Image 1 (tube, each protein chain N blue to C red):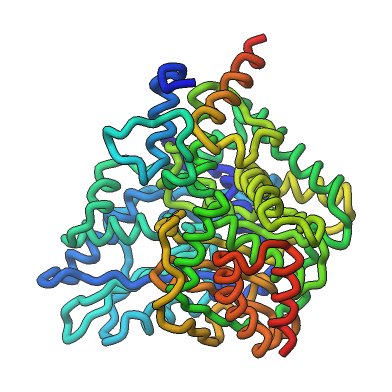
Image 2: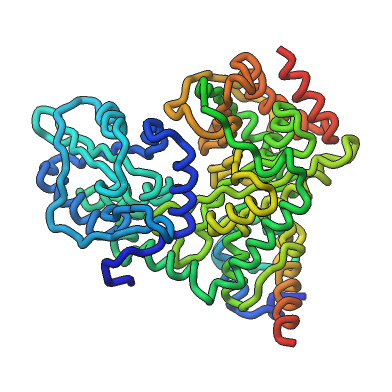
Length: 443
Length: 87
């Protein structure tokens, strides 16, 4: 493990966060912070909770790292582990409200570690720890590790926390060195070739996706909840030999083409880049945006052909999803004279949805579509996320200028209807699916 | 092709990405990896592990669903890449 305290380069994941957030106004950064509230086991004292937070901070470099910019690019400075960690103690019934307040002010990376903790008490007794982290400190998976370890350190029963506490955590500085090493030269070259191929084969108007201008008037959101759609997806996966992720990506790409008018849209996957066992559980930001060109193919062609192409594109995008953001930015500037940009996001999060040939399509509660205004009012103009759960929430977030609320709601409902129509064999071609999506959006 | 044709390292790498394959159940050469729980992200995890274990690098042309259809199709690509790298 890295032992000195001289500045180090950023990992590819950290650099991606740095560069992407540079495109956001400073006053909007806090919208992107991750937050969580961790229950404190009964009979645990405030001092014990603070000690647990201190232990967590000593274990993970990310929690005691400062970042600054320099002539050679952004750098990270890992600070020595302190015995005591400053933690706010707040008397409040609602830990979520405390977390929201903790996230209000921007964290200044040059002078403040990118995390804030508060012990939330009721009548002096701690009941939750509110935690907020800058995305450069951790992605969602890293936060799961932090929460699990902290729970265990406070005395809760968490098998994952116990397992992780028994390990020496991987250090982002070591990863940064490895990613930039001679041993990884071949991988970096392969990734650059992949981007060169994208730039050579995709039209200017579709790639890179132009950056959003101004992010006004914000974002709206609609969520489809449907247990039946989940079963239809599992059944369809068994019938087509396509993964549930590929199937929902295929519908999202059709939706994107319909909403944006692009015949061959370019979507963005988020590659978790936690495929190497040595770095699988690191507390850092590993996610990077991975563009995936979508070839819808001839309209009358079987939907299965489209799925097959999409599966290949998806695998390639994920595999080439770890890259030096600055090197790729330079390449894009040279080739296209524009800035690197991403939009049309797709993220499939469930791990418990699998091919099941014996699913029944009837007998479920009717689907629900719930509209809301997301906390995060910045970012992609079109963003589809599939969350885990019995009702498989399909979360669609959009810029209302691109997709006004009534059409957004209709699109969410279309996912339910379309999964059924593919699963029961009513629709079998790309044309049928695209036509039905267009029809649904005529509201 | 049978499981006897591939080394233990390969079998171990594949098995640990198949959540629906019970311990003690044989991994047959023609088993559907998708049906055994190999989802999209697990496919990339398996790919990385196989690349590390056998010191090969899959070119984009081999990053296809067909490559990861069964243990036999995957092992065939590994052998081709490994033998190609050795020449």
